Length: 191
Image (tube, rainbow, N blue to C red):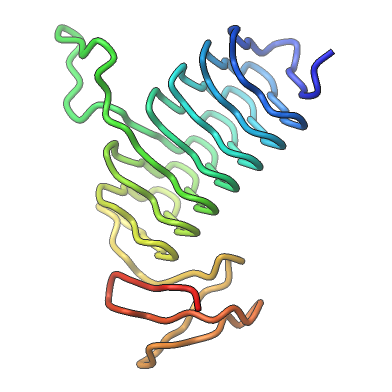
């Protein structure tokens, strides 16, 4: 008996590594070789490729496909129907033979519903990609990005509270009082 849950309509190709407490819901497909951490939730119709690594406590909502060479660190949230890519110029007649481009989503990042993460970039720690956005650059830690193409529109605490620097270089989160310092227009660090 396993210490994780797989719905009877889901497929998990073996061998795959799945951590304790993880739940894999209706119509999911986890490919052979995939690595999924502890206490994750894969909503309905999630696909996980064979060269994917998912950390602990990740929440992957319905209709998300995580293709080969995407890595999610711990506590990542993937909103419904958001999209990862792993090829910059796909052609059906000229397959790449598994030579995909890796993507990294760091600890605590949130990817909103229907956003697209273009391959080859890193989404920083506790960053927030707004619903419907297209991220085609490295997103800094704690940044809020929105739009097509996405642009930095603000900063977010790791708890999810919005940071308001105003004209100052330091601020505290209004929700949890964690403190941050703005080093430049593209760099915020937790104090």
